[in-house]
Length: 325
Image (cartoon, rainbow, N blue to C red; front, side, top):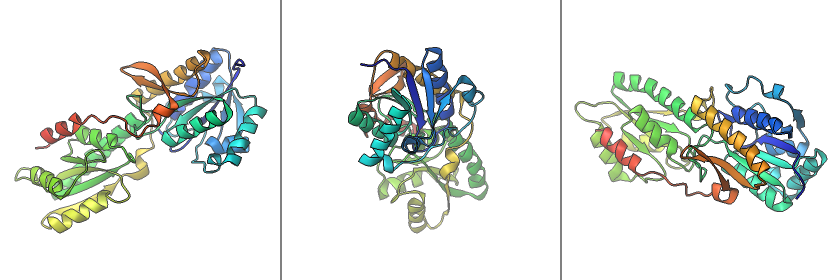
């Protein structure tokens, strides 16, 4: 196996607070350990279009506190074609990149895995997604910041909910995972969370309505995990029909959740996994994601990291139920 001399870095998919801290960590740890660093702008599209530049420590100065990603990001459809992947590989050869660090979520790491399988290139993934849905790591880069943003928004919404004695359905991101909804509901003192891991039928809806709307509690906050079919609008419409006596409102937080300065926790996670990515390359590891479990850096095969069945702690559902009476 040829010795790795040059590491490429890219961010892909949805942006997440802390991605810049991860870029900084990979760049500086790489240079510290004698590697040449090249940054790829605009994700996999940048590989295809050769948007690749040399990076030094100065390029990443002052970015640890910034949200988003300085390398920009796209969801590349062309990369998932054989022709697009070939163009990307040709540019990797042209730029003499020996290993590629991909910072992104499930789709991004799936792309890295397929790229590694097709062209036998060393790919290292960093878990950059607000959804916290990657298997093998306790938390993903951006998750903590996003949860804090949601809690801040819900705190403000509750002021209006209480003033007007309203029921608010607050829709948050998370795609097919309910980590954001469940934990932000506990942290914000919400009365209920509707998540993919705990399907809600008519009786369950009636149950939390009865529990949450009491003589002493005439306002109510329900956190709903986004869904094309059963989002906040769906549940609000049901309450309007089944409990017409209540004043119901909807707040969809949307992309507001993605932005903002990363929390200390996300900066530390990004820094530790970024350094871990360089250490993995030095150890000769290939095609793994760098995560953190029980405060220890761990290496997870990409095929495992993208699994759709990341364990959900169902005790959290009981915690919310007991505290929302």
